[in-house]
Length: 267
Image 1 (tube, helix red, strand yellow):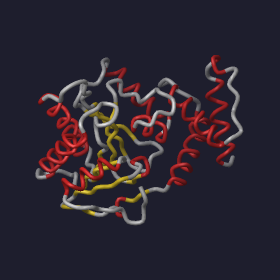
Image 2 (image 1 turned 60 degrees about the horizontal axis):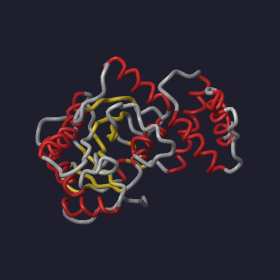
Image 3 (image 1 turned 30 degrees about the vertical axis):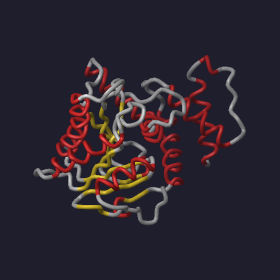
Image 4 (image 1 turned 90 degrees about the horizontal axis):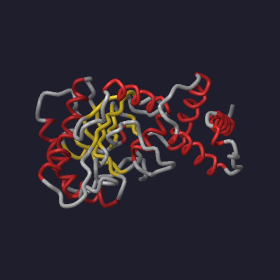
């Protein structure tokens, strides 16, 4: 199968899984097909599926990520001792581990085609990630506490592992407890990474999007926590602060001391 045939096959198989999709027709336009496939995968619960689907899905997702362009850690410019600032798509970065800003259910975002990082990571990783997360949470028997972290495989992403952490949700004024919980997210991810011998970890801007933590305060907490951790004996030698918005890039540049660009890569 070529990539178009793979996409149509995956859509057809997902539509067959649920009778409520009986009237859904596959659109002719490529972009609409991409949106339909992602939406169906976003909505699908953490249940098993046959091996042929997984084989085709894996081939398709790897091709899509290659099309986007894989970013090597060596392509990033070092800002200071072991610290990098990079504006780009975290699902394209090849490193030991990337951090996912998860919700307490830990099985991903179920809103079709939502732009949050949780949705992006789960889609481009593949449905095996939701399956692993679902089985992990069933064994745990309760939702994940804010500030904790879990490690999973990365499946079809270029990185080796995903560190999932639940950040604090801000509904009013930011409290000391909110700040402590956000710091705990960074520390939990770093401790878990060190326990598994990871050397490089890429952090997204935890809690600053849908969870409404002020961007500047979140960045300062992130930087302070990471710097303090890296002063210890640890396998983690390189930490990437991954930003998506220009606002966050400017904040981190101010905190880290000057503009840093990615070699050979546009945001």
